[in-house]
Length: 117
Image 1: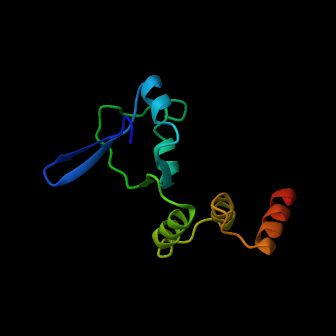
Image 2: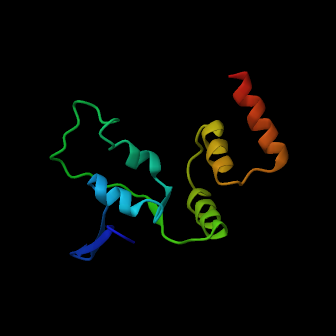
């Protein structure tokens, strides 16, 4: 995983993601965030609220995959989310569509719901 470092401190592991434009460019395509992408995106400079306290330590959970097959990513996604609290069905369907987990009928239903909105 180019430019993605894993460090261990006091029995805890931390992933140091690329920060500079150069590091990001050289790491592109090496990892895929499977769960928690919205939490990570919320820390993006374009998304952060002006009252955000950058000096505070934030912890969050997410799943990052490296060189997993589509079947492996699908299995991890389903396993990670099967005991989660219910979210808006349209958000869940959108994620499932991106992961190619919808049947043809579910795809048609999703398209119809999007058109109605």
